Amino acid sequence: MIGRLNHVAIAVPDLASATALYRDQLGATVSEPQAEPDHGVTVVFVELPNTKVELLEPLGEGSPIQAFLDRSPSGGIHHMCFEVDDIMVARDKLKAEGARVLGSGDPKIGAHGKPVLFLHPKDFNGTLIELEEV
Amino acid sequence: MIGRLNHVAIAVPDLASATALYRDQLGATVSEPQAEPDHGVTVVFVELPNTKVELLEPLGEGSPIQAFLDRSPSGGIHHMCFEVDDIMVARDKLKAEGARVLGSGDPKIGAHGKPVLFLHPKDFNGTLIELEEV
Image: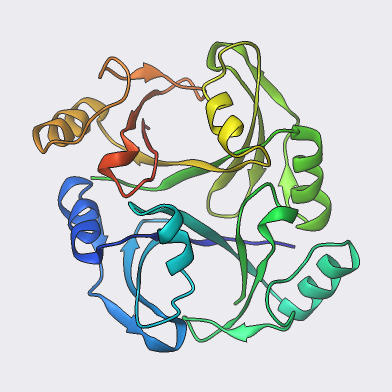
């Protein structure tokens, strides 16, 4: 069912300094910061030959990554995102097998403009998994 | 400098049940468990079209992932591994810019038989980064 690893997302308290680490120390190609007010984050994409790392900084009140940074002020790996062909088929299969979908249980439009959902980390070894339909 | 994302490593307390989650619920192709006594882990490879997820269970006394599981008993994302062409060039550049290499500071032979090193998570937004020469 799951396809490519679309990205690994890292929550960071300071996007400019995190971007500099990936660009200057690790020598990666990084994008300009992109504000996603609907998703409560500003994102920098670290482009790798086979996938992306996304650096996420909270934007506005109630950012979905703020609680994570309150627990881990220096940041950390927040989630990983796998691609699926059909997110409703994926959701129904996972729910039938007892996995919990966060929020309403219905896919939402994610930061890339595609339908996404998040699986409960307690059902997947403490790992927050995003599924994105591509 | 960094190239492909070689893998994302997830520490798990029970490799059999974690493997079943990725194989049966997420529908991924998984390997047989592979004991790596020299590295203190048993590994299952989750093969994705563009990279790998590695599920790691502690093996023997003093496993390098035991302290992580003591803090996070249900598991979690432990590190991510980027490929580099020349690990000594990478190490010297990173050290010159103030990044700390874990352990002796010299690369070791990793679980894939290639030279690896780990960077201090405090220098990279709370993220443990492995570099592997390929």
